[in-house]
Length: 570
Image (tube, rainbow, N blue to C red; front, side, top):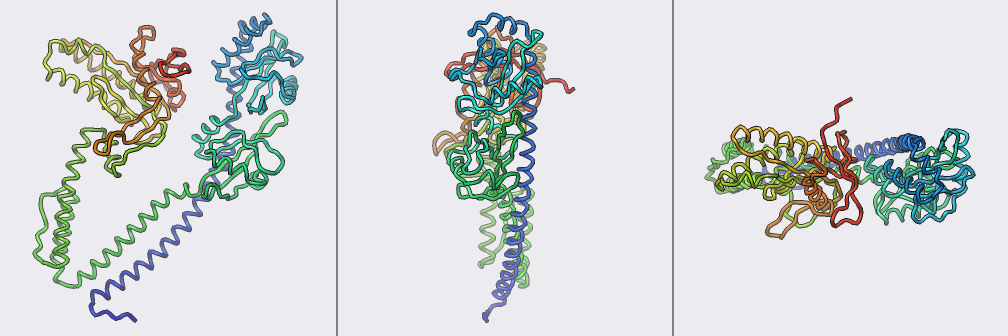
């Protein structure tokens, strides 16, 4: 039996043991409940993901079917077929394939002979599965299936070309590759892998959203397709437990494509780890309160504790000007001194936070203050907006530097408000230009759509500002805005002594070049957005296709659009 000479020690031992016991029970209960709940959530997500994939494939097929139906009825297309010139027919197929977003376009004669093929490295040999797809289409007027062409899996759709009787067969489709798997992963938040069913043994994965090491480990699991077929099973991958489900996608033409869906249990439990920390903090707080309660027994500490509590309340209200005056030279006196130093530290921190919030965006300031200053970055999808002021030189002529700065600050105030009202942050001001980010440091549900809406709001704000300038006899200003969505590196850049949170990458450079293109009279627009931004937006905007342009520093042309306004709600 422990012997304590001091009553204070006995109180500490009693309350510490009681709170520790409660803490252990709470931790065990919370962990068990959270793990069970996480498994249930993953199982529900996997089952929903399996149904979602089938629906997405059906919707994609319907969209492609409608596009191909329009193409087969096009008179120019039929005229090109009638010429019998392979190069002409292939050129027409390539153009129309680019318009509908198809990865492959084939034209076959009625006897199944190949007339034209848009694949550059095609072997010229058509698989039997494609011939079977044509035979099915002869009965149903269209048919689709997943077929391998020269080792690459495609989701193919076959339809006849009518004039008015069938004169040829057109086959169009999309690649089933890593890009598709990653797109589906972004939509469902699940790991996605496609493979043909091989009848047991290790699976042969043709496309996946997983890292190469995890993909290789998944491929080596024996009887995976049998063990996880239409049922959720746990598996160890890369040292973490994953829940895995194998589901067969519904296909035509007697073909089956299986999809492996998975999610990390550790990743699902990550939010609950924060709950564990909260429970720990609450437990520690309870322990501290118990200790304080024991000390309150001694009347000699009542007044100092009350003084400390009153000072803490003032600090909570943001009042840092009054210190705690306790003359005792014991632990309470030391506590009072530490508390006073803490007040000074909080006041200095608030002053620094206020100053930093005026130098950079509040979101960036919060990110910098919430962690250590470490150089480095992370890859993330960000929508970048560049804007540049037009005709500012004429406005600043014959005016003092102070007047120019005032006008420029007025302009930036309006533009910054438009960006921040749409969940964006101003990364930096570039002379009379501006760079804004959507998706860094904080991601939102529709960063691409927010950027497009912010650009339109900036134009509206500038129109209102120009009306004020006209009333004051000042020349009007113009604006050019370029927007692009891409995977960039976001993080703290600079040196250990001076750093800046920003984004870098080819996607950032493209946004700047799109802004520069708004100066060209042939485009006649104030806002140019890349096709990637338009496709990523969850909202619909009125746009005008400007075509494909060659951009300095990029080997492939970029499809760009003029953004005209928000599409009306149907």
